[in-house]
Every structure is written in C-alpha cells, then in structure tokens.
Length: 449
Ligand SMILES: [Zn+2]
Image (cartoon, rainbow, N blue to C red; front, side, top):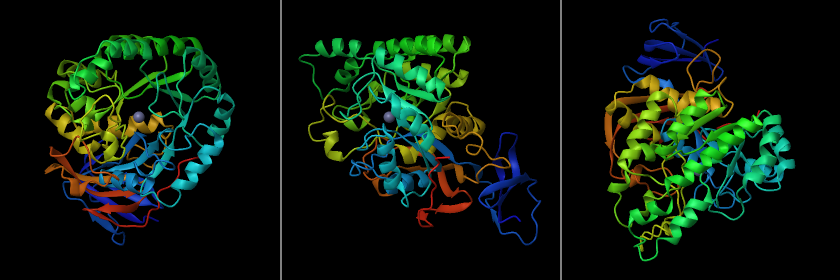
C-alpha cells in the first residue's frame, strides 16, 4: 500500500536524472516509477521542476552534547541539518563530555540524543590510548567505526595516539571488520613551525597557516598508508587539506589499499590569501590553505582521489572564537557549516562544470557507504529509506544570521550568495522541514543497528 508519492521533472537516482515519481510506503522507497504513473487515490506532492534527490549524509559532525551543549546540541544541530537538506548526520566521538570512547560514555550520549533529533543520527566511536577493550562493546552497541587523532585533539579528554598506539588499535579494528578515521596531522613539523613564529602577529591568518605546515599532514598520511598496508585495517582520512599529499594518496589507491578520503566545503571554497586579519571564524585544523592548494584539491575531487565532502561542523561559543582580539593562535579551531554544505557545494560544483550526479555521489552515497549505511541511505532506490530533499538549484540566497539554525550564528559563510535553496526535507517519509518551517516533533532515529 503506497502512502505517498513525490514526483518531479528532475529526480536524481543512480540510474536517471529526469522525470520520475518516487513511491513511498512505510518510510521506505517502494519504487521509482514513470512520472505519470500515479494511482488515483495516493497523496501526491508534485515538486514541479525542483530537484528531488537523496538527502545528504554528513558523516562528520561534532554535536558536543552532553557536556558542551552550550557549543552545539542535538536539537539545534539536527534542525540545521534538516534546513540544509541533510537527512542523516554521523556524530563525532569528541567534544562531548564524556567522549564516545567507552561503552558507558556511548550510553550517556544515546540518552542525551534521544527524543531531540529532527534527522537520523549515527555515531562514531573514538580510539584513545588504553581503550582497546572498549572497541568491541562499542561496535556491538552500534558505533559505525572509530576516530583517532595523531596530534592534540583540542580537548584533553580525547588524547591522541602515537604509532605505538596505532599498532595496538589497528589490528583490533581490522579484526572487528571496522574502520579507523584519522585526523591526519602529526606534531613534529607543527612544533618546529611554532618555534619559528616569535614576533609574528597572531591576528594575521598567515601566522596561523605557518603554524600548521603541509608537512604535518603529509607525514601523517605516509604513516597511515604504511600501517594500513601492514595491518589491513581500513583507513579513512578526515578533512584532508594538504595538496602535497595527493600523489601519495593516489599511489596508495592505485595499490589497492583500503583507504578513503574526505574533504570539506571550506577547503574547496576559501583561500588563505583572502582571509582577513582577526577573522577567526575561518580557523580550523588542518587549515584552509592557499588558492593553488585549493585548485589541486578540486583536481582530486574530479579524479576520485577525494571520495566525499562532509562538513566537519565543529562550532563553539562565540567567546571561544576570540572575535575581540582576533587572535588566530588562541581561538578555538572549528568551522560551523552543517546547514550550508549543500548550497555551498552546489555553488562551487555548478561553476566548475560538475552536475547533480556528482553532488549526490560526494555528499550522499559515498558518506553513507563510509558509515556502513550504504544499503539504506544515500540514494533514491527501491528498499532505501525515504530520505529526500526537494530543492531549487537555480534559486539563490544570501546567508544572513536570522536563517542560521546552528546553536550559534557565527559562520564563515555569512554574507555569501549561494545557489541552491532547500524547500522541503523528508526523513524516512516524514516531512520535517517545509519552506522555513519545522513541521513535526523531533522523530529522528538513532542508527545503531
Ligand atoms: Zn572534526
């Protein structure tokens, strides 16, 4: 029994980009049929020529609840997601207190998220020194994989791993058939760079950029490739920035190693040369680099070396961004961006000759697969969850604070003109966002099975 049908002249599925009707039953896509195959009694939403495509799956979101809910929480983060056409987020294991590095910590997080989420939520666990025995129970309870750092994470309760720690964790993760997500910066080149910065103005973006040299990423990636090869553990490089490491990544991929790579809209949009003094809302780690670096990242998106684009939404309170002093060195590093990933990327993609199929591959299908959700999220196909966004690629808007649904309004996209207006968002067949309004009480599911 079909519950409802959504149709449009531009439906994006793995097989077509054109007129079709999406038949939905019990929260799932029952079938994709001809545009005019509409039984008389079934409720129909006709989206005209707006794009109907799978909701984005944002596999890199720091929600921060419990413990730092004043930075961002489940209610606000998932509303921002719904308003931005994101139908699933995968929460990172750190910046919440406790972090998701123990089963007990994960239980606290699940309890904190329950009943607050407007979209579906999955979770990454964390690997820190000495938590090897927690990894199997965390998988059993439903984390989708594990994240680690190779350098100070920014918060003391989530310590980083050294090579020795990786050698303990990676065989265990391989045994569990899981995946290790890596913040790929190692400390030595950064420590050396910081020692040479005396006398430089911490308000200049260039001072911060010098403090996080490409070598730190390049060396981390070489280490991870070596250990991936040795242990057979699947490795995913998060928020990749250094273009110098792309040839190394290409060679590893050609070798057939189980290695994937993500980058973020900010690395593909901004350029170091254009960031104003004191504009600490552009600070993240690894940093936004030069124009020349950005253009090479785009080449890697085009040739498939970079598999996906996710937000790394990592907000904090405005006070921690030190807007008054504009001190890049001391400000919290993290960019608030969850709500604007789709229009930011569409604006970039359309200018650079990419199409809607690229958008859904980079922001829906590939991140769903990374999180082990590739059989139910990330595409419009029979049997998949009816997670659908209706949006208009030709309509543009300016990012203004009033529209920001994140807990805090500070974002580097403020004031930008973007193409791609999200009209309606459905999660498992439920309409959750409709032209600026949130429709239903939060009913997003915890994806822990
Ligand atoms: Zn992150």
